[in-house]
Length: 171
Image 1 (cartoon, one colour):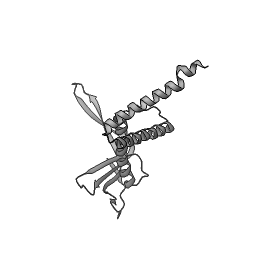
Image 2: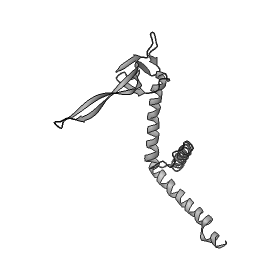
Image 3: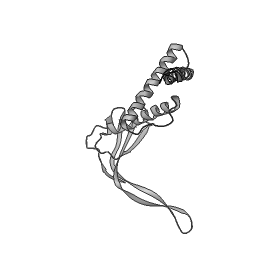
Image 4: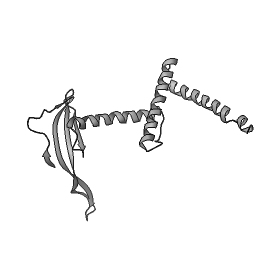
């Protein structure tokens, strides 16, 4: 349910690649499932106490594409809301790349610093794999596989030399 429109009179509705259609403060209703005496499921409407902001934009380049954004941030401009959601998709694509292409199956740290270190390390490994691919004129998957094998071999050789029995015996 719309409470108030945030579009001002004579406001420019062109916000870059999008055209603003709606910018409103709204209240959402829930559809809580309730089982009645006959055993049928009905949905009881109940208002959510928090207010939200609904921003609807139409893409200027592809007018058939209409995007709906709901946020609880009333301080952002409509252009910022649309841009943040677009960037969110870029982040999703990046995370998919990390998971599928670099085989990172889970996050090792939940702190901001830990996440930044993990992202930087992932980007470094990705760049090294791409350099290896280009230098050896290989496909990406083959280059990634060979790069990992050679790296594992180098790590194993260095680990045996540094921490092997030979160095322990001298203690």
